[in-house]
Amino acid sequence: MTAIDEAFARLRAGDPLTRAGIGEGHPLHSDLTRRGISFAALGGRLEERWHRALAELAECVSPMRGTPALHEGGVYHGAWLESTATISAELLDRFAPSVTRTTHLLFAEHQRADGLLPYKVTDAGPAYSQIQTVTPLARSVWNHHLLTGREGAHDLVYLRRMYDAMARNDAWLAEHRDTRRTGAVEAFCTFDTGHDLSPRFWHVPERCFEGDAARYDAEVPGLPFIAPDLTANVAAQRAALALIAVELGEDPEPWREKAEASRAALFEECFDQGDGLFFDRLADGTHLRLASDVLLRVLACGIGDDRLFADALERHLMNTRRFLSRAGFTSISMDDPRFDGDHTRNSWAGPVNFLTLIRAAHAFEAHGRIAELSLVHRSVLASVAGHDRFPQCLDPWSGDAGYTERYSPAMLWLLDALERDCGILARPDGEVWLSGMAPTRLDHDRSARAVASARVVGGFRYELAADDSSVHVHRDGAAWLRFPRGWRVILDTDGEVSGVVGMSPSNVAGELQTETSSLTVTLAPNERVAVASSRIVARTAPGFTPPRH
Figure 1 (cartoon, rainbow, N blue to C red):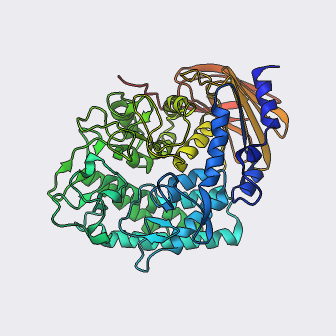
Figure 2 (cartoon, rainbow, N blue to C red):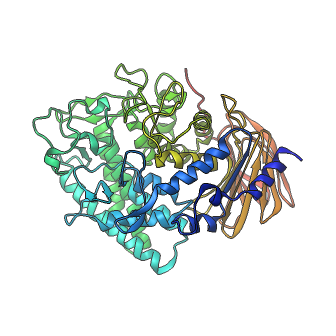
Figure 3 (cartoon, rainbow, N blue to C red):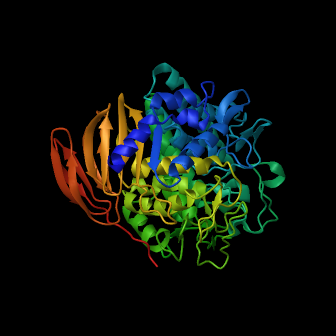
């Protein structure tokens, strides 16, 4: 029996919900059962870590103010707009969409009469002392709508409720967070961006003046900051609201015009062409020149073309003197004298944060840079496989677990990374990604010999198993596809092969074998071929940026 055969057998013999202790009464149970989600690994601790992530994620889903909701976890009680209800809920959508929906609606339910959404909701109630918004809620709502299959009138009620709430919040921001009338969005305090302990906000209050999100302390030099991450968030939010408007039968043009105005203001006020970075603009018109994860936040909001992203990779993100640490992307550039890698605190002054890691995929995937993303994931997976908990922060030098535990973004990162790099990932647009970078080459002797995963998508049950050389995919119990390590095969909405992409940092030559045909091709890193009737009909190659030293 080969390692792949063993992996398939182990996958089919497993009972992930029982092993994770998720019983029938739990909000995750029916969603996970319906999607047939399972994972197995031969050797190493990844299988144990995957099931532990599922078990602790279940502990982070519980009733809040009468409805099942995702909780941030760790020391953070409740759901937070910057993360829990947005990027975390977006990842949870592939596993438990019903909880994503109720978490979204929780924020709409507790919207203030003047239009401000709470920055968090806990059992004690909603809170409004800052805006704390980083990932666009509207994008998460739109992707949920697409991923759940546009399920009739009930779904449109949800979509309308969220659309109206987000439109009112947009109006609140335009009225209260653009005091200089630049068209951008301003930060009034540290917690507006969630950048605790960052030198970005040294000598700036943690909360807005007197706990009022519409006020800043005029005695604080520099305030208000024109904030690139808040402005990019609103630009992305407005672009997604335009898509929702079309679905609801409304005119999308006002939102498209507002989104473009936000993008223009972002570049006019915050972008430094020479450095290739986005900086806060202070009240005196100067830039606060700090290289931070603001860059990746802006890019993850869909800002910038392929050329800008390639420059960001070359100069900053894949540079080991700047942001590319051993354990992923740091929160401050490592060559800045203010960098502090202390991972034992809730800090954005240097350590790697799992929120940065789960947001990053949006930027890399949008520009077809999956080989770089997979390369970064490899070193983080090696660290996570050896952890005894799910923390917020990682030590940039060693990858050791840092501040807090039972932190839901860390659990969701692991579940997402294993699907994204070597599993079955269902996309909001209806595509299915079958990826083949098995975690068989991890440091610290934490590799698996082979891994396998299962998921039901579009009425088919897919099972994928991979070792260090090949990937086998079964559909509805029968052998269906085979391809080499280092490729991602893309299925269209009908479940047919529509493309193949190179995920490896090196060229990979091989054969895509189906039940009835085969296709031989060599793919460079990130190179993509479009496929129709088992023939290559187009090629694109955005290039590849290896780590710079």
